[in-house]
Image: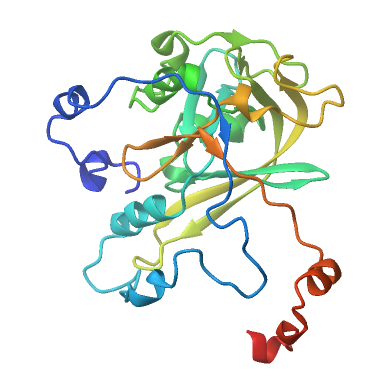
Length: 288
């Protein structure tokens, strides 16, 4: 259901091009670091909105409420868990005759030793589309991080082309060779990961028992590729100002990273001493 655009109605605009034409032109921006909203925040201060958020009430939502379509949960979650990294997945068929390139909203890194990533595919094995079928058959793929300079091309890979039709020519993006896997990485991508399948797990619907709704794949990164102008000398840090990553929001929205703040991780003993916060040292049962 989650890949059925007519059911999900992801696009809220009857005439998107008309709406887009009414908006300001794209502006080139550089990543800017600002102060936090409350640079003088101290332990125990709570939210930085003066308590305004505490005046608002909440609505309880039962994801399995009678009559609530599963697509409603999908739309809600992708609008709430934001911004999300995009899994731009490149795969190749086992016989090498077909290649596929597709974006995934359900994607993240979950470990560094070994480097592990998760990808989630709507529908069960019986509904396996190009990417999942190729990943299952070859047990390998490449993950590419989407940047501003090819967002339109990356979005175009979500087109509902038939199995066996490659997205590469449709987008104008360029395949680059990998070392450990046969699936090409995206040459335009500033950071890519060659990965091999670790395991998969299929999930079943709570609303319709017996119906398979999702396949989770865990893949291990076996080789990293970073553009030389984005990586530091130690090869352990990417410059976000060069990466210019795009993130997924709800509906058909994407987000740009144009502003950032920095907040050092607090040290307990130092903060207790500097801020005279001994009164806040409560047991977990009392301090929640």
